[in-house]
Image (cartoon, rainbow, N blue to C red; front, side, top):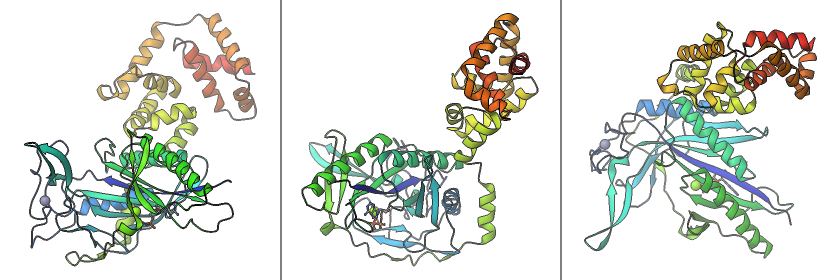
Length: 439
Ligand code: ADP
Ligand code: MG
Ligand code: ZN
């Protein structure tokens, strides 16, 4: 029997603000001495009152806008009640029915649209460490993380396999980094992943009547393994005529398996109610427009522009746009290179082969280096003509595109010749040789 996987994602992203969500403690807690970033508010002491962090809310909305969400005019915070030692107040301030961002979407490279249900603002919990002190097993609590701003991004159950999930997650990570709102470092726990997985029987209408949630995964590799493991486990149960239990499971890397944590019967009733200590928000349309205008060019748009404007291959463009800093550097270097007859492909080659440390180099310096190299060693004219001839022969598709009127295709051919000559040719010479021979 052929079952269809149904997968939805909940992702937590910790924001990189200076202070915490509801107090003025420093949110930069990683690696700091335990319980040094605390105050009555984030320790949940009686009588302490929360004051929302404006920057965090702006950043949450920026994330929403980058994910094509709508930003409702009215929004509020709610209390999510549960009892656990990492939650000093006995509740987490979160958002329930009126989040800051709703109804977004992201398009994957296969053209599929993943709907974003919501992106809401909440606070992180304290960190529990289970240790042995004086031969006794104890649980230690560090409140430095308590109250750090957290954005939760929830998708509709639109994914059908782990490959789509990982593509989405990488894009989400790249996006929050482009926005400069989170380091999204998985190892530090800045980004935590929870896939919800079920299988639809052939002919079944609507969603399956159960779902399995795998909690708090902190790597793309593990999320992929957890999903594939679950799909297999659930398939076996369905084939035996059983319905998998609705439950929460965890990924166990040693066992290479998901293990049950709690079942539906033990599921929490969070008794959400509006946070009485924080007034409702009215988000002005002017502010939303302003935030929208301030967004940087986002990863997918940049990738498309690099391919088109600079005639780069998908491979090159993907590497150059992976990090915003590299992409910005490249844009700048191309601008300067233009005036010196240096083509984007030459610059791309140098950056991709990591011949320079971009953090210690200015774009103009890189161009100077390329110029010095190309003018120092020059290739013999007849050798160059031979290489140009070969490149034309070996790249029939590109030549055909050029002849069909896609004149930009010549940039690709120049790039290939430059690579073959190891940058010993002058890009302008190559261009006229190519044009001659193509004619
Ligand atoms: P909960 O209240 O249990 O967290 P939600 O309805 O908020 O449940 O959904 C949480 C996540 O689970 C969402 O990402 C949603 O898309 C996904 N989801 C809902 N139903 C299913 C299902 N049958 N199979 C897989 N994922 C699902
Ligand atoms: Mg959930
Ligand atoms: Zn505090």
